[in-house]
Image 1 (tube, rainbow, N blue to C red):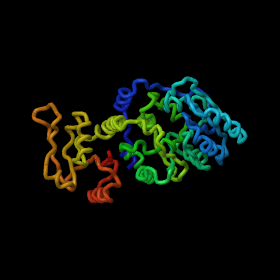
Image 2: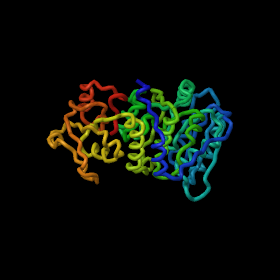
Image 3: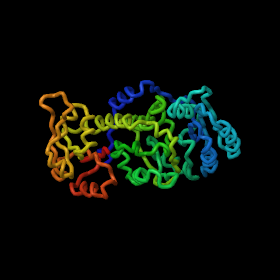
Image 4: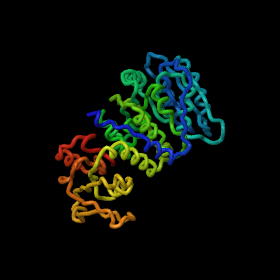
Length: 378
C-alpha cells in the first residue's frame, strides 16, 4: 500500500516555488551536533505567550541533553527581555540556551528566523516550537524515541487547540488520518498532513532539504519544506499522542498566506506526483471547485480528464462541461456522469466531513483503494 501511496514531488514543485518566491536560499547548519535535542523557536512579538511556552520547555521530562535555541526577529514588544529572563531559568534546569536576534527594524520572516535558530543550535535532533504554543512534558522524550526509529522522517504528533473548539474539522482530520493517509491526503487545502507546530526531525533531515524558504510574509515555508522533504526521499510519521497545544489567534502567521499561493503549490505537487503517472482520470465534482481544478491543470493533464462525476441532479442534467475559457476550436468538452459510472482513478474534489458521511459512503460503494484508485484534492 505505502509503495503506491508515496510518490515524491520533483522539479515541478521546485519550479512553482521559485516562481512564487524567487529569493529562496538554502541555509544548512554547519555546527557540529553536540546536544541530543535543540528546541527551535522563532519569535516575533510573542511576549504575551512566551512565559507559558518557555515554561513547557522547562517542564520537559527528557533524560538526554536539551538546548533552547531562540531567534528574536526584530520584535518591538518585550519579547527579548522575557527571553533573557527565561534563559536564566532554563539554565538552572541544565538546558543550554542559545539566543540570536535580528537587531534591525524589519523582521525577516518565519522561514529566515527558523533557519537562524537552527544554524545557531547544536542538537542532533530538532524540535520546532512556536512562541505561542505549549508542549506536553513528554513531547521531546516521545518524539526523540520515534525519530530514532524513523531517522529519515518528519515526526509529528496529535495536538489540541486553544481556545477549545477552534478549527474543529481541521483538528479532527489531522488527528485521525492514518499513517498511510499522511501521504495520500497531503494535497488537500489543510496543508501538510504532519502539522508544522508538532515537527521533530534529525538535523540530517533539515540539512538535506536545505532549510526553510526565506521569502518572508505570505510564503508557506512549511508546505514548501514538506514537499521538498518528500521529493528527497524523506518519510512521515505521527506519534499518536496529544503532545502540543496549538494556539489559535488572529495574529498567527498562517493568516498572512493567500489561498491562491497554497493552491499553486498543491496543483504543482498533484500534477507531478500523481497525474503524471495516470493516462486518464475522473474529477469527482462538476461544480465550482472541480471546474477550477480542471482549469488549473496543464493542457496535457486536462486532456487526461475522461469525465466529471457528481451526485447533483442539475449538474448531471447538464451532461457536459464546456471549457469556455479555452482558445481551442472547438472548445474542449468533458462529459458529466453519475459517480456510480465513474472510471478510476479518481481525483476527489469534495470536502470531507461536509456531506453528513454521504461522500464517504459513496466512495465505499465503489470499492476503491485510497492512494491507488483515488486521491483527495479538496
